[in-house]
Image (cartoon, rainbow over all chains, first blue to last red):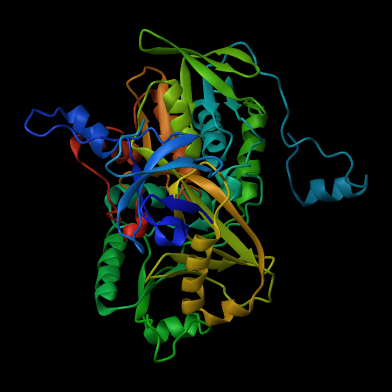
Length: 89
Length: 418
């Protein structure tokens, strides 16, 4: 069982959250020409790191906010959580 | 190589079975090979076997970080089927079914292929319509499919919940009678033994640490047991695909996820088919030892852990008990996890890459085991001829770029949104 510290609600069990994938993927800027490759990278291509991985989770059965979580994909250890608006340092 | 038969069995019985040949050797890597296959799982071993058998390329090494058959080929729920709707998937899988049917004879190794049939249960009128359409598509591609109504399903699997007041009543199901199961470890060992006998080096405990790429061409591979010169490399590393892709500066439409499976304590024969729950994600069959073999959803987040968490297992087994209530009385014997190379459209990739001499075989999601022979056969063709076969032409890498996705279920890595 993962325990995730929601920056809004505190420690909660994994059951209350749903997963949203890699948090470092950025949508290409609006209002400019987007190449096929950029779009491909945004929609499909992922690094899927082994080790520390910043990812999005939603506290679906809680405050319903999206949050950022730094988790080790090999050990499941969670290092840090941020609000969605906070930048990954 | 010693042929396995009743006669060799009897002969060895006289010497207390102490004089059997080794099934495969344990060589050290040579300095140079024609082809190196990375990954000693089912697909890698099958690829090496077909390279030797179909294309006469025997100066081949299989490099495996751990031991052969220790990854997903040893961790799956052994289901073999070709009940696909899209042509690319259906024709590929049915080609594989034909290889499965003669695999034990072909490999001189009993893989215990058991074509017991698979039933996908339907729980609404709409789902029956969808299954009717899928069944028709399958039959057009020469694959057997039978649409069953509620009474027919009840006759085959009376232990399922047919009571009136259930959340997901059984309306019927789609059956592929020729689908089934096989002994997964035997598949890996059978391919390994034959590949070895034809001159393939199976090198275990050998981790790939890097690649030599010069001018966009593969020149060699660096391993924990020395550098190897080679012009063609086939990647068959399933859940580790992204780790090796990073060493090649490639980003792929793959995420590595965790999938769990479990078996119950052994019980007397009760279920002689493979059955899947249609209102969720749960599948079950009974092994020859009597264990109920079960699996279902991904844990739902990127993971390389090869071990799962309880909430998903609980969720999956809740579905199982909804479908077959007697399961609640059984004790769990073992649970385990494997790491899946989840592609973004749910279909695999068997293709060349932008690097000359680098071939890619990945993205098998949940469906890797049944594809073992067809994947090995087509991948061997792709490597040997340096061009894809028409059977794996649909499994190209650039479909994500062109938008020509092979979205059989309309789901990729986020299978839980269904």
